[in-house]
Image 1 (tube, helix red, strand yellow):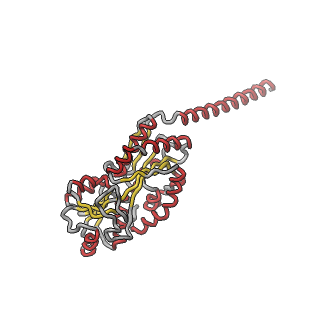
Image 2 (cartoon, helix red, strand yellow):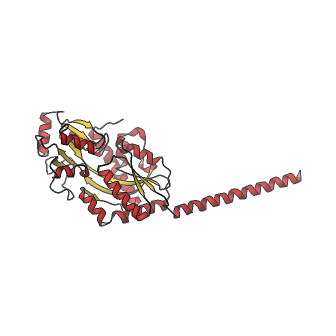
Image 3 (cartoon, helix red, strand yellow):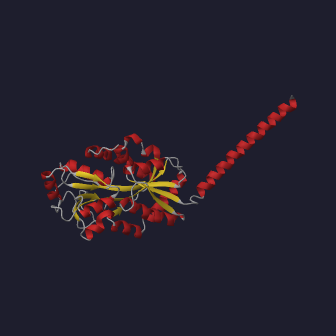
Length: 333
């Protein structure tokens, strides 16, 4: 019995040592992986279709991150549900820094899709804000209104007879149009499209007469005369979009709708990886070229001072964003 007992004890010691060194090896491997991050391509998931402001900002960001990190950053468009599909996909991805996402504030998604239970404080680590901007209210050139006051008067005289082309349920332009309807006390007939591009094509063709759009979607059409601008959705005019008045100047002082995009990683992503992503974002996006490219599309670079500052900003903005969604009357399943 004694030899067997001794043999059993030796096996226990051997197994304990094996497990100990296994844990040490795993720890060393993890640290090595973190220190050598990134060593393969990174996915940047965008919750909106190609061609709009979000896609444009994502591609500028991906290009700059690729330069700074030395690996390819691949933009993957996962549109639908106002960005909720992409956000959910990101939240469920491995927290290793190889899947990140770009979207608007998640408080907006929570307000529109409460059943998805996405929570920026629990499911994501905010990395940095990227860009902000105002949307443009524009119309078919043949529409019988040329400014915001005329649009409101026509809409009141013709309830639900203006067909508004929306870039999708829960999109920022959709919420901007819903908020406009509430504040201006008008009724539009909103038609949902799969992105700003198809919505613009419909408005140019005259199948719809009005649209609320992010600047990259429509600025080219406004310049060539196939769409006409009515007003910005921001209260004030924007230096990035010269020649188009803000809503306050146009006679609707209570109206103010803007958009912003930020960079996020899944909860559990290490602080070392978050730091590398933040530093690469700061350096790459602060370049003169990035600023000029964003300005040419009617947007302003607006980087966070730190991931912690971005989280503080998101927490502060959440109540007003959720209230704005509620006030707009937008309801999505």
